[in-house]
Image (tube, rainbow, N blue to C red):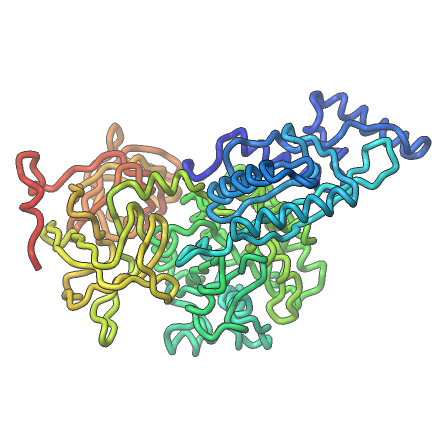
Length: 611
């Protein structure tokens, strides 16, 4: 996760970025070199506001422009020469590439971050030039927000503007973000997704969620027990694309330049293993914690919040069902959430979103600062504040930049198998996520490990992303792959499909540095727990604890685990989560102990078996 977060300098910048856009930016001491001076300036400004109203106060700043990333500062873009225009268009291409199809332009801002502002005529001309630049590279622009700069001595109205540039998708190329949906049972998770993806408000009795359920018992009880996927698209102009205007998922994909894939997880405690599997195997970019306004923090809410934080998944919160309660009840629930987020274990900075301007700020800070946690209050029946949530999702940038994705694509192919289906006239189909490399139609891979620790050859038939055909799959993307007449009984969840050139390390035993979050008694040799590592979920026995005889709640140790059924493919450094009843712990894999069949003198080809 650390690799996906920007460097500390940029995180600090994110925290500062809200100041110039907020209404009380002059109160923010961080913009000034010394805090005491900021306080004096604040009092002085208050005094001047009553008397002179004309004194010049220190100007607000954005952090200096970064060479890398998708944010560009421009003082003005008025009537550039043809040579200058070509240079600007090339620069826009670079910023779009850095943001994987999205860029943000701050107009009226110097490269050092000083907010100068432009007159109305200059701003109009600059936005017109930016529109021409976007047209040249095949993109669209959306004005996110404008703000007057009021610190200058002259009486002219000067403005700064923030503009989102989004590239019209090339063939099969849309930006795809995965959002895991967490929260207690009956919090309104599936109903909220139904309203967002179907485009129709709920009737107060759960009509909106019916299209999301996969099983009859889910419809009868109204409770999700399995993992389902729903999509919400945004076109290059930032407009919502969902099933209200499109009949099929394929139409939504064709019309969208950005796609949000919601992973609807179960809220009931008895389906906790399904929820953990969804969080560990589907590699969500973000998590949306849904909290019911009338019940507050109840049931599995704290547990789901803890799981997301343990796996370092950035989380934002949606308080639902605000139409059912008085405003005071909603505010009490929000205060309750703020208290929990500020506790030492969380160390989060809650940010209540009330206006479109707040939503823009929240989206930008959310990915740049690990501590920011936006909070929305919405209703799936009245539609209250749903627009703010859509604005937030529309602007939400990807966690990884283009360079990180390029590096992953250069590695050998590795596809995690999360789901297995049998489809009439197609044959065996597997669903999952491509962890690294590139996968194409017709590519030959090997899948394993089997119970004996072997890998079997296979050929990829067709590929589908979000239920529409796709020729090439790139690192980080989720998809389903058709495998033709490959025997389904040879496959299971937790397997990987890798390039034949790779020499995958499979193991029955491994070591991990762990923290025991909770245990009723003591954790010692012989204890059995269910281990989750990525898409691997299997019971393991504790073989030994290095340097200790037993562990108690809150203690750390390096532990050797042994899988009780069959060997698994693991990666060094992979995040690990284990549980058994009330026992819970987290950690990461530090050492792999290969099986006996993987001796150094044994050729890797002996591990491949023709099917």
